[in-house]
Image (cartoon, rainbow, N blue to C red; front, top):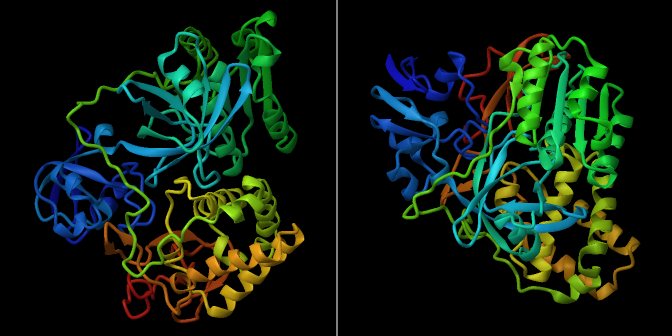
Amino acid sequence: MKKITFDKSIYTCLPDELLLDALIRQGKEIPFSCRSGSCRVCMMRTTEGEVPESSKVGISAHLQRKGYFLPCQCRPENDLSIAVPRNADLACYAVVHEKKMLAQDVCSFLIEPSVSLYYHAGQFINIKNEKGDLRSYSLASVPHQDYYLELHVRRHPQGLMSRWLVDDVQPGDEIELIRPAGESYYRAEKHEPIMLVATGTGLAPLIGIARDALHSGHSGDIYLYHGARDQADLYADKVLCRLADEFSHFYYKPCLQDNGTVQNAIRLDHDDLHNFWVHLAGNPEMVSNTANMVQELGVKEEHILSDPFSVLEIDSTENVIDDTDQHNIHQDEAPYPPPAPDIWSALEDGVKLTRILDDFYDAVYEDAILSPYFHNSTKQRSKEKVYSFYKRLFSGEKVFFGDRPRNAHHWMVISNEIFIHREALLKSFMLKHKLPGDIIDKWMRIESRYRPDIVKDRARGRMIGGEEAPAGGYGTIELSVDSLCDACSSEIVTGTEVHYHLRTGETFCPDCFGNSNNMVQGE
């Protein structure tokens, strides 16, 4: 049994137990996703002790020298002291996909990072300008629902960073950011009531938290109070009104300055806030005053969440990660073709592409053959990601940092017939939106370039740092309906905890899981 020192506490790791499992077993909340070493969401660093080389696969040499490793692949051979990643080590680049004004002085940015980022809705990132200055901006986006990160930036006349972002940064530009951090994110039990209180662009993270909770099936009441100077400052009024119309237990409360403070509005609606979780963002004075008030009304101190923004210090000698779109590419993968400006022009610089993809993915998610491949992705996320990829293909602009087709489809078993079916469906919407025949033919030839990367008779590993990682991993779930084991075909009754393959969805009864002869190849 090995001793693991982490976060000022001592944990134990049993013989042959993965470090990630050991920490979770002992009640430590550790971010993770694939469990196979592909996503690197669980990455940590050692401060004392050595980890096995197998737990470093896929991590750059630069980060390995700093002690970074993957707990999901680590069976400790000695005692360890470990820590979470340092923000300074994990800086990355992102491309600005879109910017638009939401109000006279509030600008929305959709950005695509160059590496996959793990985050909770409501957390913040730090953006670095060309001079090295850093400022914090909260995320309005929700992971697994939105492909792009979304920021809301208010332009201050004397604001060093906000003037640069709003006035100078344009779509297609690269910006540098520090990976997400922060403690104010959705964590209430599904039946517990939530109160979200913001002024100004403090609203951004609370929109994310509200959407995350609602789409996670939160059943408790959710109240959102937005304090603003005037009606024009309620820049997300329409979005929040739509949410209130869609969810009967979501209450949107705009609070204009002329009618008093958000504290007054809260007191009018509530005289007892026991069992509430409260998230606060915006003006520091409002945050402090509201925190004091809700405690008086019964909110536990540990249920009041707010992230104080501060500029992070980074040693100027530190290197940062610069993952370009050429990383993690298999040597046999089809390279990008030359840009096709004629296709991009025929697509009206993306306007018609959006219409085609809207119709196409509406059909895909209803299609009996194609829809099973998308059960873990929202329609909006799929559209945004593919739009960015096509824009990269046709315009030549470096706007796509996601996985190329070989990696993106590595786990999907796709026959030539399914590939042709997908092509025919896409072509039908090209015709519907009246693309010229020569443009359609050229587009379809580009599609065919990626057939060898996508069509295959079994799953393959994802390329990470030039090496092929396992094709997937396993999770556990308690069945809500009866099912059959994909290994032995025996019945599994409701309430049984089973293991399932994260990518293929294959389900294994307790007796079969662990029998390597029954597991998916590559696990």
